[in-house]
Image 1 (cartoon, rainbow, N blue to C red):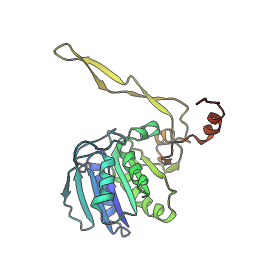
Image 2: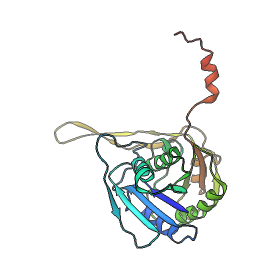
Image 3: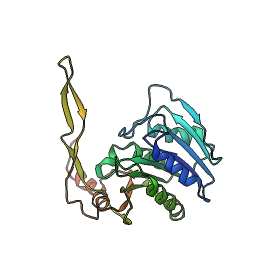
Image 4: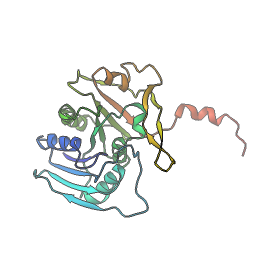
Length: 254
């Protein structure tokens, strides 16, 4: 397999290094292309760079399987640039991660990690976004090993067009894995208002998680809290098809 790896924590982040090193050991991997931001780009969503040029610098690795580029852009930039310019031919799969911190529920709309996988799906390439659901535990071993085992299964079984897998691995030793839907949560007390030495107000984004529903084990939020790896198929078509016919019946005049 030819695999493209990206992330939003930066090309030298511990998570992407752990993922690359785990895959370098796999016999099914022919070539790894690592194209990732030159710095942390967390929570940047699906932003792309429009008003300045992108620059890509080659990154050297010890393994002959791996080729790398550091890009001064967003995660979506990195995947788009890799697919359209840096790689000679399309990869079999795109992996984004391993992210430091969870990407559960509503987080998928803000996540640069998930957006890198979305960009792959837009380009017609199957993709998996992987996150370690902790900001304190820096051991990516379980997440890397699980991903290395998941990749050949996805390659064999395939994913439908327009769909990616969003994977969240709990800290510590996982109890197993569950295939679940996205949970529903929001953030409260989002901004911490402060005053600078000149008396001007400024705001730090913070926030505490608040469940908007009973996040049961059938959701990624609930299962991850119980210690399970969660796998959620996420589609990029946001159309509410069930609502289309009702809106057509509104009798809108024009």
